[in-house]
Amino acid sequence: MNKPTVLIIGAGFTGVATAYDLALRGFAVTVVERGELVSGTSGRTHGLLHSGGRYCVNDRESAIECIEENTILRKIASQCIEPNGGYFIGLNDSDVEYSQKFLEGAAACGIPTKEINVSDLLKAEPQINPKVIKAYSVPDGTFEPLRLAFAFAASAQKYGAKFFPYHEVEEIVLDNSKKVTGIKTWNRTNNTKVNFQADMVINATGAWAGKIAKMASIHVPVKPTPGIMVTVAKRLTNTTINRLNIPDDGDIVLPQRRMAVIGTTSFEIEDVDYIPINEEQIQMMVDRGSELLPEIKNSPFRGVFMSSRPLIGAGMEARSIARTFKCYDHEESDKVGGLISIIGGKATTSRGMAEKTADLVCKKFGLSIECQTKNLPLVSYRKYYQQ
Amino acid sequence: MSEKWKVTFTVYRQKADEKPGFQDFELEINPDEYVLDGIEKIWAYHDRSLVYRHACHHSACGACGMRVNHREKLTCITLIRDVTHDGGKIVVEPLRNMPIISDLAVDMGQFFRNLDNVDYNQVQPVINQPLDKGIQPDKKHSDSGMERLVDCLECGLCISACPASSTSLEYLGPAALGANQAKARYEDKNTVTMTDNQDGVWRCHSAFECSEVCPSNFEPGWRIMDLRKMTISARFQHLFGKATPEGGK
Image 1 (tube, rainbow over the protein chains, first blue to last red):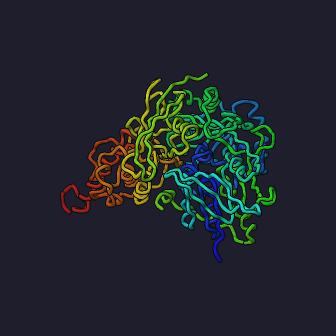
Image 2 (tube, rainbow over the protein chains, first blue to last red; image 1 turned 180 degrees about the horizontal axis):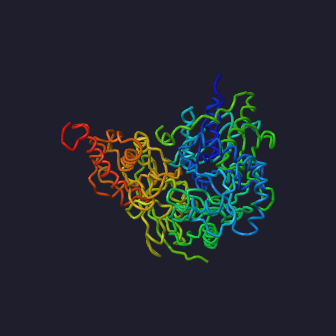
Image 3 (cartoon, rainbow over the protein chains, first blue to last red; image 1 turned 45 degrees about the vertical axis):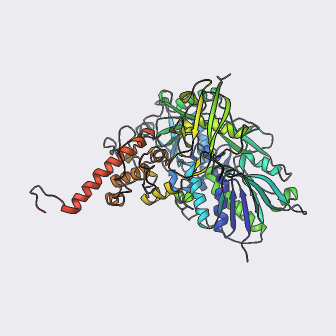
């Protein structure tokens, strides 16, 4: 029997992780991406390997996914993860009051926490605001986005997946029975048109998923919600520092190489191809970040960047939307066969998202093949460009 | 309302077999944005066929290396204000000494193959990655058990700036040699033999262009000199065995 062919649009974390999962299950996988890998939202993540601590009070479903996938990624992707853990620190009465809810939530979600004595904390991370009055450790980490994506992609290539970067989708091809049979793309490197056929097409374009689905006359409720991140040229901690309170703007600082990255905000826009800088938000990041690590305001500025989360829209306030992902089988929802859209999620949970999507793909083909990505270490990210 | 400058981006263009050349794009842009933002703006609003590499936009990943006004830069942290003036021009070209895929994107295959051969892990104990000074181990601090991503972003800027890389395709180049220095210094000193050859540690001309353009203080030039020291010392030990004060074998 020939392998079923699956075509994935988008090489963000969702696309590369899904390519890997499906290739490992024996599908013939092709990935098209209009730019370089992770050149949209995924590359511009702040790089937090979530313990789930940020969501354990307001969004337990996300928090549970995070801690499960955090544990798995540490095993399979250690090549690009700083595994050092993180702290939630309290600076005032409101923070201390929140700690009860935080502990209950963390316990309910299975996130290991430990109260840290303030003087020990300041010894371990001397840059933390000395006014700290309460602190808990969590198994946060940080990852490097391009290398994580390359590692998934290189692992997918090992099992036969083919990647076509710089190919922009121009049309989704449907047959008379409204079944998707392939796509037409524009290879931007040499100005040629390239067509792909597939038994199944997966729309994994995140914040752009609405635009792609529209090509098949389908509405997908994605709500691009960018956030700003500010970087200073000083590594201030080895661990991630979170404010011990309800997630808010500018309440997390994490280390990356010789830098500290402060995140983030949340606002809504229509066009996500280019997001202009908002100077007030930069100042707010520096001010709020300095509450956690006062040295931020004295550190040389390194850069500022924006990333557009692909949240699932439903008319609610942006930040309150659950971070968890949704997978739409358009045969069921729109009577268009051969097309699936995956939306939402986050880098930390990309493997799990891929597993659920691949389960659905298997079901659609009437196949029963186990997911194998949980325990197998990814191949070196440096292999991706050597194919 | 933020400040706006009129800037002409003169961008290198190359599509398959077509004749390469430069194309001008006039932008109204906030000078506190980065060169990469300008390129992204050209792609978003002026020419969707422009091909360039980018990912993290904050100098963690190393994807967006290009030549800006003939100097190797990570475009995501290069402020427009720092490389031109209102009414001025910015010339953007792809990195040198690597095959061009199209426009500003180069093929990093050989570069990663060389790094892969050295096989120095990007995540290393913090103690082996001193933040303050030089490339020697940080004796002041004890090993906290913490790990971090190394300074080398594997962006390829050093290869593009290196005069020796432009004369030999086989030359390993500064990044891979720097990685081998770090590996020899902290993990396994026998690894020096791998680069003890004409396309390895000896082809470097000590121009230090690599250290000059390195956006991440990895100091490849100094690392290559240190690797030479370790290589020579390994050769002496190989020839004479471990020297004793009496001079006997």
